[in-house]
Amino acid sequence: MTGYSVMIEDIKEYLKKNGWSTIEDILENVPSAREHYANPKPSLRATLREKWNEHWVECKRGKEFRTILYKLK
Image 1 (cartoon, rainbow, N blue to C red):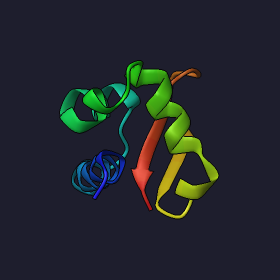
Image 2: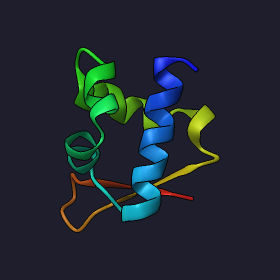
Image 3: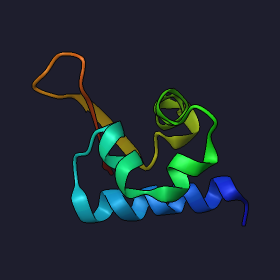
Image 4: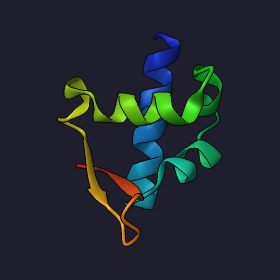
């Protein structure tokens, strides 16, 4: 398994347990997500929006216009 695969599995597990979460929630609670990227926040946001991840992650706008929430499908 690659570091990327481990990170994705860790994120899936976190979302499975916690439901709708912000990027900040994920980065705070999933160490592999923080450690995988040089610039974690924008990189993880881009990764979770990639077409190849659409089958397992769902996103929506939060109550605050700029907040995006993520959930395991």
